[in-house]
Length: 190
Image (cartoon, rainbow, N blue to C red; front, side, top):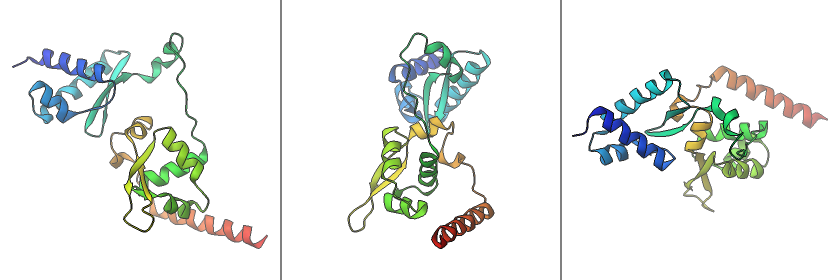
């Protein structure tokens, strides 16, 4: 049986080599441990990485872990690496993304019904940015595509799971609906 330091080294090597998130269960299988033990070991590693003020960190995304560079190292990285393409999320993209995040799985027509306008462009951009993905098809006429968020969405917004999304205040939602209806009436009266 491996000692804790050896287990940590193996986990670090796995996360580095894979380069994307790895489920705790897969790591556990690889090192002959149970998933809960792996989670505890990795979380302790995360704390030590932070305390040691290292340039890398381990992040938890759902039931997976990923080794990545700390965001405050970006300015140094761009001096020697190609500048990664920075995706700009406009208000339209953010609005569409929030609808998908809170209502997923959701079809394009359901998004359009909520937004009140065509959403082809924002949905296509969010798919291109890998913030949303096809989650399957609705069992209805035409079999429309169902969309949901991706792991990149969780990473981009620094949340572990969808349960970490802010809870919407129902009173505020009603206020927004009222404002939207008033705006529609104003536009229609012109």
